[in-house]
Image (tube, rainbow, N blue to C red):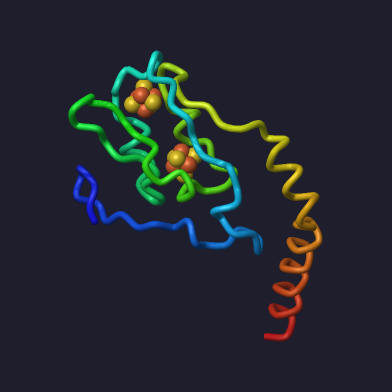
Length: 120
Ligand code: SF4
Ligand code: SF4
């Protein structure tokens, strides 16, 4: 499947994030259509994950693949010129980090990489 710009679109909702099924993580943009001016910056910019499709009839973006969104990314929110995009609170992610022991997992990953480098 391809989007309006001819870019290949994939469903990434089956991937894991730190061992958690992506489909179970509620991190994705919400568009306030009262504020959206249909500029297309969000749709064009989200080139890696392709969370958005373009509604040609209404000339505005749609959050078509919310679970494709990179957990923790807020690029579309930051770039939206009319503040039409929102995300859950950062605390939602901090809670996930605690609940799923991600600090320990991250430290282990770094430790293993350093040991591997030393043994090369
Ligand atoms: S960047 Fe903001 S204003 Fe522009 S299309 Fe996306 S949501 Fe609408
Ligand atoms: S936060 Fe990043 S990955 Fe998620 S929809 Fe916006 S630009 Fe795409």
